[in-house]
Image 1 (cartoon, rainbow, N blue to C red):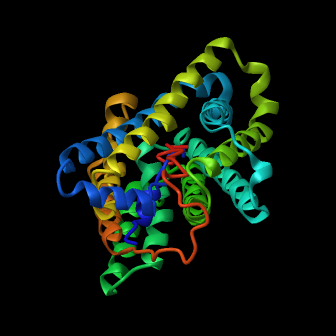
Image 2: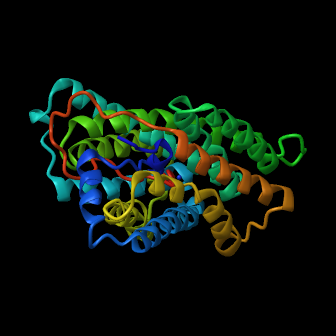
Amino acid sequence: MDTDDLSQVRCGHGSRPRRAPPATIGAAAELTTGSRLPALGAGLTVTSAFSVQLGAAASTSLFPAVGPAGAVWLRLSWAAVIFALMTRPRPWAMARRDLVDAVLLGVVSAGMTLLFFEAIARIPLATAVACELLGPLAVAVARRSGRLGLAWPALAGTGVLLVTQPWRSSADLVGIGCALAAAICWAGYIVLTQRVGDRLTGLAGLAISMPVAALVAAGVAAPQALPRVTAGAVIAAAGLALLLPVLPYALELVALRRLESAAFGTLMSVEPAVALVVGIVVLGQAPQPAQALGVLFVTAAAGGAAGTGRRSLPATNHSHQQTPSYLPLKKSVAGEG
């Protein structure tokens, strides 16, 4: 199966898992003869990317009240409630291995989102997204087909150096470190998402991993944020949960039925550029020319890796899944996150 590791983007920024399952790809193939609408699929995918980045940017409004970790906790809690109501999870009916993988996915998702939000509290949104994208890019290159795949890490690394400019005295090394740590979590998130998505039906894996992510975030954020939580913050978090991850998931689910996975992954690689635009318009984060060039380098590397990273069809499929059991928690990031 041609699936793009870079298309796993997002819980997250928490932003983002975007892999077409076998059934979805089959549905897309059936649509090629008549009702398939690539232009609509492309539009939905780009709209999803903007929703992810707008959700991450809007989440910064909660930082003064509850802090970055508190914003993650509130938003993931609402997302957990929404998806639990949608799926009515039954963990007792799951195999032990599947349940453990879903729980691990929730832990990694929480780590990815918490680190990303700590990053965007310190460094520009586009810088954080460019750094975080190194995670899925590394996974895609590790599964590369052809020597061309080796060129993308060099291009992405150059782009990240231009974006972060760590040699400058004004560089926030803690923020950069958080974004790079989020990239490591995103890589693990992709591996676990594929494993869970291959074995569980529909949204079953998500129904377990999302509450786990909310609980982990609560353990980190609640002691500091709970005394500062207000009714306004709770209501705002509910709206942000719809903007990210619920809306991006819905958009991508429809888009995956109209696009081949390679095209979908390539379109998702524009997220650093989308983050740059959102950062300028919403957050007033105007980059230097070298930083803008770095974002373009990372975007190009992500698009190139999306065309060379491939994953074979799993040997067994226990559930004959019909819909993806994952969604963008961010970008990743879930925002992302």
